[in-house]
Length: 131
Image 1 (spheres, one colour):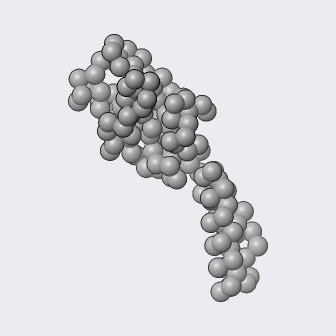
Image 2 (cartoon, rainbow, N blue to C red):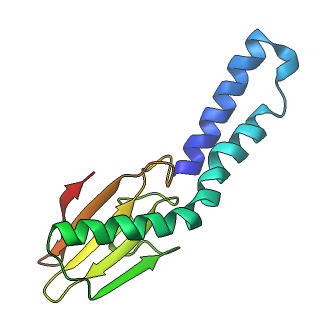
Image 3 (spheres, rainbow, N blue to C red):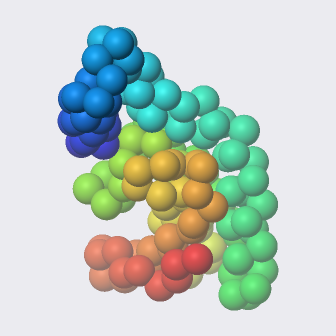
């Protein structure tokens, strides 16, 4: 869905640029699509370590003992419909609860340092924290 939106924006911007300056048109949609669509994928692996540190810090502040902290790279699990393809997803398990954490923003991915923490309650996810 995000890539389709980026494609629409790239084509729209190309039309606008071509209206004011015809010589700049042509390859602009491809360039914008590659930059806006691909760059968040490049940033995601290095930022994954940063997000792990932030999640551990959040868990310490909330007195949550981490039993397991697992990263979902391609599959988004229970957050499939709530996140985009460029967000990093973690599952944190302690002795009594399970937390799903979406890192980054829907559009910019890891360029944004947001963390949305969902807790699994009665087999449903409830948003409990957003930074």
